[in-house]
Length: 135
View (cartoon, rainbow, N blue to C red):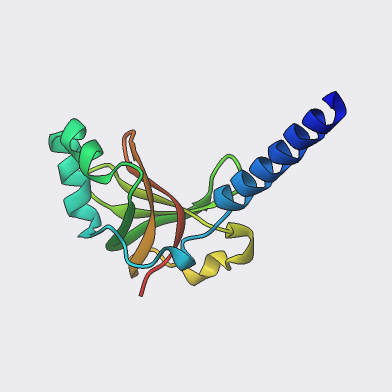
């Protein structure tokens, strides 16, 4: 009987782990419409003016952001990030989903772009992760 209970617990743990892994690595392609559509400048202003209210509105939500690219680079983890204008020194940073499959030369400084990703908050920039092109 103990072996059966152990086996059931083991199967449940493996199934839960596989589900978590698939959800964590899922892109936004199937996520449908964004919860919010906004310009990079506007979302940055909202976080800069009242971070608590902006967190309530945007945190962990899918946000489509339109803006002008200021920088394209790989971050410390080797993921492609696209930065957009927001304020004087800072703006919106988008960490691209499956960045190893994206040609970095596709994005150019000064280009207007729409990206969709999950908002994780505000450091000196508004940060979006698991980003894909919106359109």
